[in-house]
Length: 191
Image 1 (cartoon, helix red, strand yellow):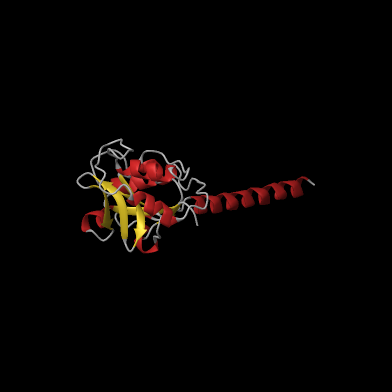
Image 2: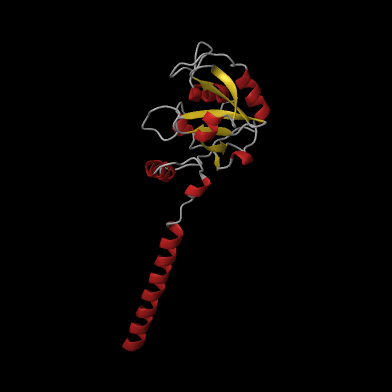
């Protein structure tokens, strides 16, 4: 009887070790492999991306079936509004302020911070997969400790609307060399 109990304990321990090894292997795989983020240039940026992803992404948001065209048309009403840090009005606004202001019109609350906005929705790693209404995010657009430094809204035809420091609220091509080199991913708030 003791021999069978000892054998059972041994088998149970072996099974637990195997399960633990499987969990370690599965859980150690990155959710979003670095290779899909083509603009990560340095070890420190890889670490920032890892830390960003570990902090949590894909927060749910209720878009109330808001159409992408409605959001884009609302954003276009702000074309030409000058840039100012922290702004959310027609007097002046920053990039995350544009998103806050536009989405608030549809009772969708986003934080007033590009890095925090990037935590909402499903991550889209390739520019070629972006759809109208997706949020777009960029790195290295100015000196800061934040990983994500700029945000905008994809309007289709490889363009996005955003607030630039030079031109205020404007429409720019995602192929523009400056922005293309800094694009990190988009997010889709609804399917």
